[in-house]
Image (cartoon, rainbow, N blue to C red; front, side, top):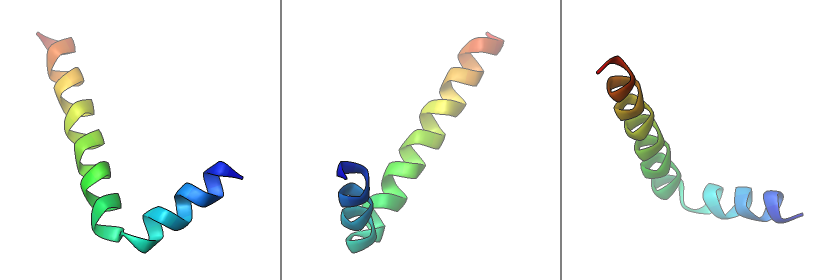
Length: 37
């Protein structure tokens, strides 16, 4: 129930959803770089 509610909220604010996915991608890239170092 809460997941569908948050999905509707993200759908209502697509720019926030885009920003969140960009942050996740950036954090994942940083973790990969740290793994190489």
